[in-house]
Length: 320
Image 1 (spheres, rainbow, N blue to C red):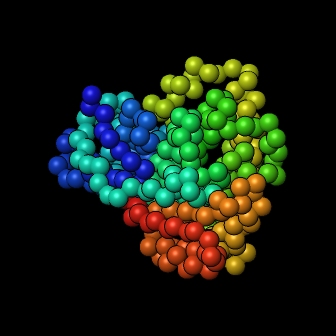
Image 2 (cartoon, rainbow, N blue to C red):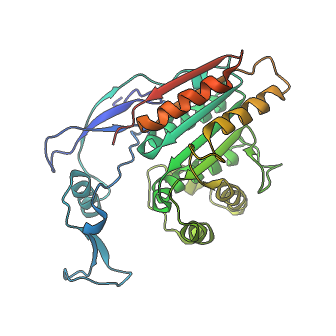
């Protein structure tokens, strides 16, 4: 009865009285079907302030030691509190607020492009979860969906990598996405396309992430409860296949670079829709959440590829 009614693209204020009584805005990663309010909180702290310490408080390079920061930001204090009191930290939520995305769910469009940049990934994940939920319920949505995640560094991939992978695997396990014809070089996973742009990645570090992805430690999440019931050989095979494909969708570049520009991507989406069996439904919805600078580039690119076909574009500010 205390479920918060949320819509994709909205945000809430969060207060943790044990830290202070200040309200902090965060974008929602939840879908309307969720029984929980899902927030991604990045720890804001100066990179030079971090150090590794032993349990006695002295600096160390021991891998079993823990990280601490001299910057006592609100997010870092929350990080300390969660690690100390996990899994229960009392918090207050006010909201949700903001205009939700709508056109990306409208079946009059043949395709939807959902873009999350930086902390705007949270809202984009919310849209993806909502799309998957609606398709599971038999509700009509755009025939094709392209999910774009743009981040700066390889370290940023760790933020939501497992969330995205688990979501795709769960959706394949319940057959809302078919993996029968999937191969490593496929651009699409059935009706869904995923592209992950890493804008400032060192090539060596990026390749190291790809080769070592299986050893990355996954933190426990309330969303794991369903997956734990479905662990078995069938799921493991699907997960291996989806992970291999998802790793192949990591692109070293940005949406403003010449060779990976968003206008090239949108024209490619147009080509897929024009070649589909239902070519009369070739309208494209573009939804973006992230920094304002990239929003102007996306808006201009949408105008260039619009032509005489239906196009809708929606923006939402990222909150972190």
